[in-house]
Image 1 (cartoon, rainbow, N blue to C red):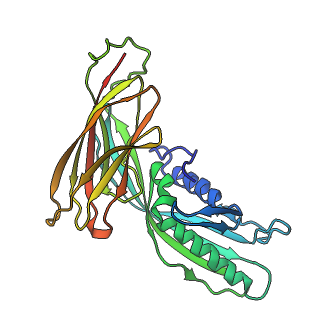
Image 2 (tube, rainbow, N blue to C red):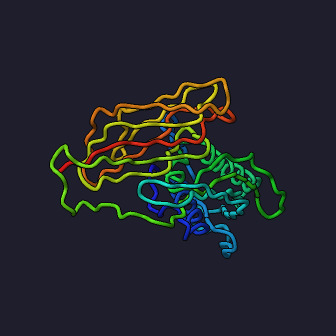
Image 3 (spheres, one colour):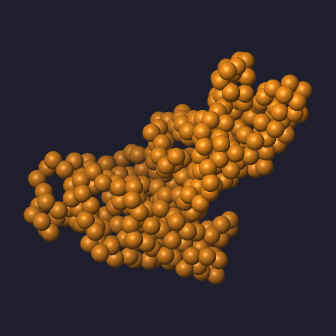
Length: 315
């Protein structure tokens, strides 16, 4: 699974947005088919499950006779704290909201046969935890504004009637809160200047928190006309222990444009790196993004990234 159709989280969908993303993501995996957890692993069978959220009515009976579905996952989201940081760009004034969340995944199985309900619940909990901790499997959630920070080992909940597990994950929901003066974004229908004489544009991407391998910088740019991209300037608190590598994607295809930031032994050292993009031309409608393809783990992560890309519209 590489993309989700559910809309990205906004200030109007701070509760429903994360749950919609999670619902589509989990249904795409737990559908009774073979899936490869990442590009370097072999396909594994992910059983079909009944999926419900919060106060939804539980599926009854839990064992769907003739459908092979005998396990239910109930997702409960508990907000903890929200932080709003300034997010002022050339196109909008506002703040970046970061909601700290705890996600509870309650797993209940009634697989018939001696000991099978416990085995089924254990299998589902192992598969779920693997999805939550693998950067490749979880990156579609990050693209929509929901970052999974990690999952804890499954807890066993004894029951005579069911096999039960609880998987807990920490997450961040990030979305812009826009207000103030917001100049209109050109739609490409206005008169454009002659080739090579367009007005310079500044296009910004950002990640105020840790830069995790497999996830994208926040922000996307969709070309409203043919544009010449000339350079990218990254300012970030340098990583420790291992380099940080960002890669540019155009129309969901990785390019050979990469920015590497070497590790610095002194914590919270801010560095700036400039990359010549070689006068890369993008066409109308193409989407440009920046992805973290390599980064250290834990406390060694780079943080506080701002990437400014320069470009000029072409006729």
